[in-house]
Every structure is written in structure tokens, then in C-alpha cells.
Image (tube, rainbow, N blue to C red):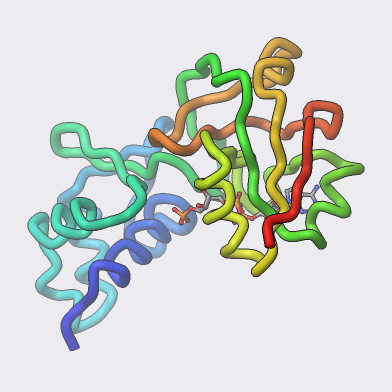
Length: 186
Ligand code: HQG
């Protein structure tokens, strides 16, 4: 069966965010790998992966609804989402005054006390608008809770932020005091 763009995206996310070693890869300090090495790693996944090439990667990225991967010359990296050991270095940047986070009501019960924690990933992921946060939250719940975050205040208190893609910012943990509003989306 032919590989779908989703299959390729899923495997590339796995390789560049979570388990590069399984693909014979090592991320550099900023998360980059050589595209040729990534292709070699993907081809090792099995027979249906043997024809994966740069054209297939480009087509996957061009058709994706989310910009997950960044290409620069011969290298590629994930914009966000990492769980690999060792912190991926990203330039720290000034976020917009307000950012959003979509989650489940169950998680919100803990978040309202502990704040936003990075959980299994290296960073907390925040959305630039409510619509994006809603889509993120809907991965977890049919009635997500959308949090409005005082990103300006959190940044001014010394919490580092960096840009993931045009819709996503990543940050270290966000204490509960910077959560301004929580509303449940039906
Ligand atoms: C929750 C996708 C309990 C947090 C998305 C979230 C995003 C807490 C879950 C990107 C907590 C972690 C990341 C606390 C946070 N107690 N639960 N103190 N603090 N949580 O999947 O932000 O499609 O690791 O609310 O679109 O949902 O993969 O993070 O529900 O941009 O490209 O712990 O992944 O992008 O879940 O999603 P995740 P996320 P891709």
C-alpha cells in the first residue's frame, strides 16, 4: 500500500522530536539533521518505505495543514514538540502579549493549581489565537478548555519563550498566576 503524507509526517515527527536514534540519527544542539540521513533512516523502516525520497518529504510538507518542519539547505528539523533528552536550543524571543492553550477539563483541574507544565515534551506549547488552541484542545477533549495566558507578564518575569511556527510558541513552564481566563468550548 502506498504511503500517505500522514504516515510520512508521523514518522518524521517521531524521528525529529522523539526517537532519532531509532532512525540512526542524532539531532545537533538546535535539532537539525541532514535530510539525506533522515531519508536513509526512514527507508530502514520497511519495504513500503524504500522509495521515500526528498520529493515525498517536500510533498508531505507542502500539503500539511500545520508547518511542523523547517528546512534549511541540506538540513531539516522539527519546529516544536521535542521530547528528546538534552534541551534543543532555540533563540529566545518576545512573545505577543496574550497566548492561548487548549486542553481538557481534567487537565485544567491540575493546571489551575500547578500551572502549565511541559509534561512529556521539553516545553509547554502555546497557540497564537483561540482558534488554534481550540484545535489543539480538541485532540484531547470534545469540549476543550481554552486558557488565555499573560505571555507578556510571564516573559517579563524571566520565563523564556521561543517561536515554533507561525501559530505555535514554546515556553518553559507557566505558573498558574499567568493564566488570565479559562473558558470551556462546547
Ligand atoms: C496538559 C500538537 C495536567 C496540557 C499540537 C496538554 C501542539 C497538564 C497535555 C503540540 C499540566 C500535554 C503540543 C498539568 C499541561 N497537569 N496536565 N500541570 N500542564 N498539561 O500533546 O500542548 O500536531 O504534550 O494541557 O497542535 O496538547 O503534533 O501538548 O493537554 O502544538 O504537530 O498536558 O502538539 O502539534 O499534551 O500539544 P501534549 P499539547 P502536532
